Image 1 (tube, rainbow, N blue to C red):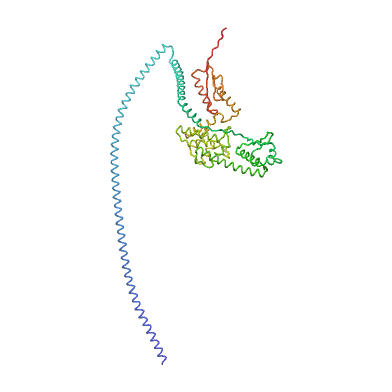
Image 2: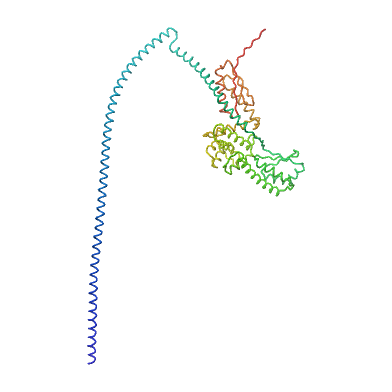
Length: 516
């Protein structure tokens, strides 16, 4: 019984607990449902507000876009109206011009008709004139006994001879006038330029003679089995000629820098007294370094003396190297200094830039001294070097054109060419091989003998003047001026010569009789 009571009590307790839990859960569910409905209602209101706001914004944007489109449409309409107005105005102008053109056409038609009538009258007059002319020619032919063609030929021949004589006389007169005016000024400038430049000249050869105090030193210089002399030749690249010449050793080589290194090295070895292969190599290396430093120093000193600034260091070295180069027996550095000074003076006299002229004159033979020798004329090679080291275009052109290898494009070019010729043509400046000298004289005489009417030719004044004797029965006085001009032109075009060549044509008639 107690057990049954306990079971019933337990069942009742469990039922009551479940009922209480149900009631509690139901109250919580109702509360949550109520809250969810409130949240949904708030969210609904918020979304409605957001949608309304977006609608208002979209409506405002649409209205703005419509207003902008209406404004653009009005602008386009205004532009269209303006263009239409312009087109109407141009149309009216075209109508006006068309009217004027029609009026001008009518006037031209009237003028054309007038001209046609005048042309007809002129043609009629021309026919009448030709008829009269023919009648007059017939009368003249009857009177003179010559046909019209014969009379015309005689007239043409006489006019041709007269015109030729007058032309030669005019040419001679103009040339004389040009000589009186131009030659005087040119000679003044050239002579003044030459007189203002006075520099010493040095003659360089392909050999250097080293003098020794006694012939006993020759054996020491040669060394045991020729070891010393072979070491000297190997170190310097110069041939040492030891022969029977008393108290002298000849150093032979085309490179003057190497010869100078060999001479100074040999001098130091002889002075020191220690002559053996190791000492030779040491002294030659030291001397070569001294020569390189001297070359740079000579280049700097030359540019400073001449007032030429801003040269590239390699160009300065090449200028210093000119001291050991020669051309036709003329020292290249002295020649370049002469040309630089001549160019500066001549440029100043002509109103040009003397500094540029001096720069071009100093560098005009720079293509002769580089160690590498390409297969180019020295003027063109020098121009390429100047362009490489950023020299001015007019200076480069003056360097390249001083022997006419390139076209002259600046006023400095003829000045450098003339001054180069002046420096080379100075008496004693250059030496010329006797065979070449004789050949040039023979070429001058043979060139003049190739012309018709020439009897004899004589090259005198060391080739500076050419005397041409012509036959009096072959050439008249008016033709000798043309002959001298033609010979001078041909010499100028075909021959190479220093300075200038004077051509004198002589024509004379001799009559010889004997009284018996």
